[in-house]
Length: 91
Image (cartoon, rainbow, N blue to C red; front, side, top):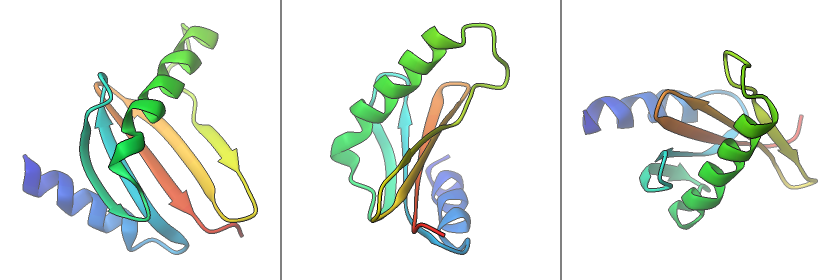
């Protein structure tokens, strides 16, 4: 499974503008991180997803959380038991 996950994250990293990607489980344990993504923040990312689920309890698929700054944009989404955060340069 680990090779498959790393392969998917490498595919995401190859997309235009992506500078980092973080993958975590529901408990906030970092499963993998590439580029600028810091696995130390996986718990915070998972917490944001859980709070979004409270705001939109019946929404399927789960909403994408977008945090924007001058330095980068962060897109966070949960799929099943896995949460993914993607860092992109602003376009």
